Each structure stands twice: as structure tokens, then as C-alpha cells.
Length: 123
Image (cartoon, rainbow, N blue to C red; front, top):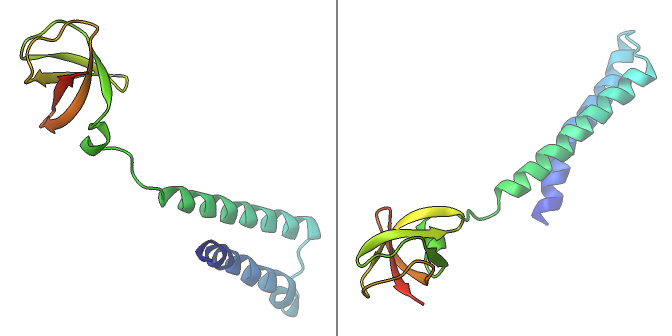
């Protein structure tokens, strides 16, 4: 229902423009070519459609932040006992392991985040 109302609201300015072009301007003796009116209306309708689609995209929930990484599985880049590097979501992160030594190539799961460091456990 909200989408229909948003579309109607975005088309109101086109209807007002049609009234001005087809009724009010001719009352004052100003006549525009039909192709010019059609071009202007086509442009206005395209702007309304683009605006409508852009607003619907902006309403989607954000999928960034540390909450998104918790529970994800990454791969260890180099051996480490306490702190090392992990490849996760196409990025290299500094990771802290509280469970001991983790070897290169091991899979780890993100349990939490402290600042910019991932707290991980071996899978």
C-alpha cells in the first residue's frame, strides 16, 4: 500500500505539469508543439520512476557493521599463538585466539569483536 501511495505522490507533479501545458498556457495564447510536450512528459515520468526505485533501495536494511561478521568463518593466513591474521569476507583482519595455537590454513569462526580485532576460535 505504501508503494502505491508513493508512486501516486510522485506522479502528482506530472499531472500538474500536464494541466499547465495543455490548459493554462493555451488560455494565454502560448501553444507548444506536441513533440515538445511529449518529450517533457517522458522525462518527468522517467525521473519519477528513478526516484521511486531509488527510495525503495534506500529502505533496505544496512548489512555492514561488526554484527555481520560474528559467526562467519575465515581462514588463517599465518601460524599464530595469540594474535595473527585471518582472511574473512575478502579482507585481512587481525585476529586474537584465546584457544591457543592456530595453524596457517585452519578455519576459524568469529565469536566477537574488540575494536578492530576479531576474537576467533578454531572450527
